[in-house]
Image 1: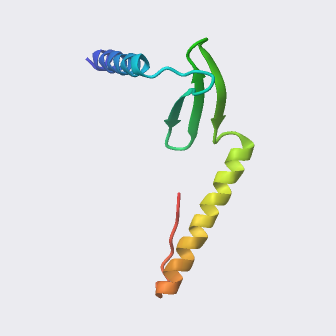
Image 2: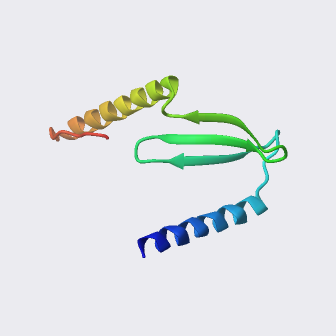
Length: 96
């Protein structure tokens, strides 16, 4: 029974992908963009559907993007802490 659920879900996802790709076509001037978010990372790709190629790929696994996201996370944490301190709340705030 478990295997049947997995097969049904995969088929449903494939139908959704086909329906979307029927409506959206990427070109070199205006590529189709796909974004996948896991619990930990974000992956993006830009596709040219005319010749079936990936134009650009980026993810937060890359060193430069990873460093930038860490800096942004620290800035948000500092901003939240400063705002809570200004309100008079001394409780600890954490961002994952």
